[in-house]
Length: 135
Image (cartoon, rainbow, N blue to C red):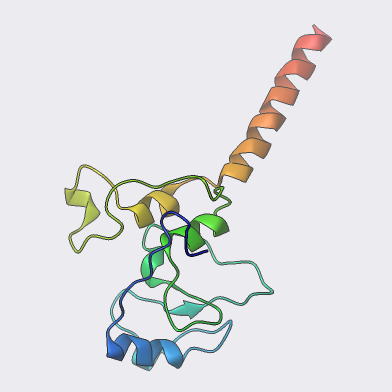
């Protein structure tokens, strides 16, 4: 996966890495160790992922590596194809509410998963065609 677009790992501080190491596969960081606003959940490889949100960069720990997921890894959870490139800044220290463009993590988290969109569109089309053929 190293040649994929948007697959840049975050340079975590030593204290963050120590917190991440404490989280078991499929588990969360204990409440006593949490920092404000973070959940630190390590994904379980054999279970569905929790919902990806615009703040996914601080929510999802790689199932096997002691780091948070990349934009590309979150995009895979959202069913984006690997050739889809997210533009703009990857992560910004300022609130994206004050920005005119959304971060790459925000774009992934705010998106409707493409495969879900496809299924919904196909069903809407089927129902419209079925209704039109009845008239």
